[in-house]
Length: 424
Image 1: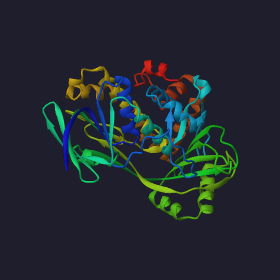
Image 2 (image 1 turned 135 degrees about the vertical axis):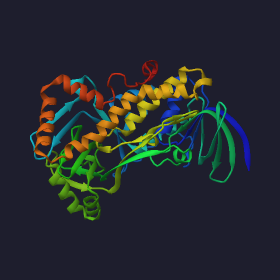
Image 3 (image 1 turned 90 degrees about the vertical axis):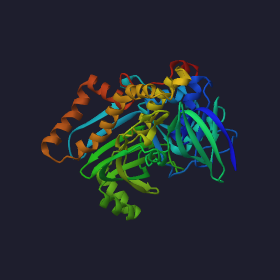
Image 4 (image 1 turned 45 degrees about the horizontal axis):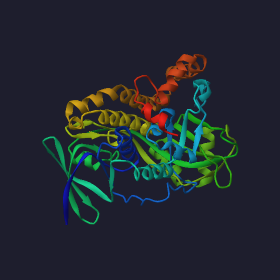
């Protein structure tokens, strides 16, 4: 059965964290003036009494920078998010077997935190709950964008529901937000470039003997970097952390197959005893590491965002934070513009130009950091350790480094000041 076509200002293909955040930003910054359709292939939860938190030892998590907090405040979701997240007060960066290390402290920056760790399920629940009251936003799920045809000033879409029902829709701007392996990006003929790092990431939650005290660790080892992000305590009141461990594919496969005792012993050898003994390891997962970049981010009436535009190495935790800065820039420009212009190529190219410095710097930082610490050459080793030591003795250099990692470098997109002040 075919339903009649409907016109929208913006259609967002993909209702994950990026797509939902973009819909909320468009609604808030335009004060509901824009008509937005969010299309997602998985069923959205029905409107209820609020977001639902289901604690789980094995919950996957995302690190949010301090700059991302400001963006999430401006779109009205930080108050709910803050009910279940863990504050990163300090970040300890070290090079295993060498003297170089540095400690970054939120108080040195005059911030309440350097960042935050939130469980993905809670972040998703808060975002989707906020959509129910977002002015101008309509959600369609489970459904997908089955076809796109450019038609003058509009993109003509065919939307297909899971039950086979199809409908037409026109929009001035289609935002492609369906992830790194974006089927819609490929269907549009937008090529992507993949840089395979020849590495795998092993992720799991672990518990320690000693409290983490809000410290996140970036530890560079001879086998690859590992990050430990502070989480809320386990049900047994044991200090918990989210592990992201970069390894060769062979070692990752071996550790995925190892029993818990062998896995914890190997991790303890690589990380050390800063938080005492490792006590427990949860469910492990592994995936290959790649840098994926779309060769075009914009076309007439089309913009590619989030992991569909650039999926980064996870070691620096920058992927979702960069996506938030992209989408807030886009939403602010779209909300301030004549709606008839938002699909025009010069308008969209201006958005990409505005974000180019931030994207290049963040992608290069995420790309080069693991490569730098993977070098075993003594000259490289000396240089990187001197660099870590310099961060500790040169406050100005450290401040610039921390500002970049926090998404607050000069020129980076920020949340709307008016909206931030209006958010309780």
